[in-house]
Image (cartoon, rainbow, N blue to C red):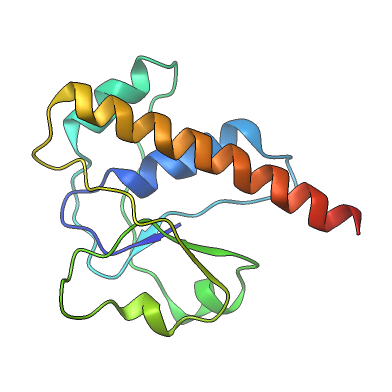
Length: 132
């Protein structure tokens, strides 16, 4: 999952859900254009509510190799209003998910649930593509 982030959350949640639901031959990776060293504590809390611990995950810088070697790249939503570097990435899925930073725990739960639904949909799509 590729995200331009200030306080990690969305892509970390997506990576964790992908690990939970995807077949073992898929490897999710959360990385961003401007990652921070901190995961949003509310994101950690709402993921624990569904039995997933993301507290040990670490935000990473996205590299050209990561993009080149990925079969799918998902942009969770750009933080930069004037420019989004992932707009220039081919075969990009842009989910445009709201940033959980500064949101109430109730809203972050809704964001978590939206991410989970989208990840499940992506896995279903990948499985159909693999069957072709």
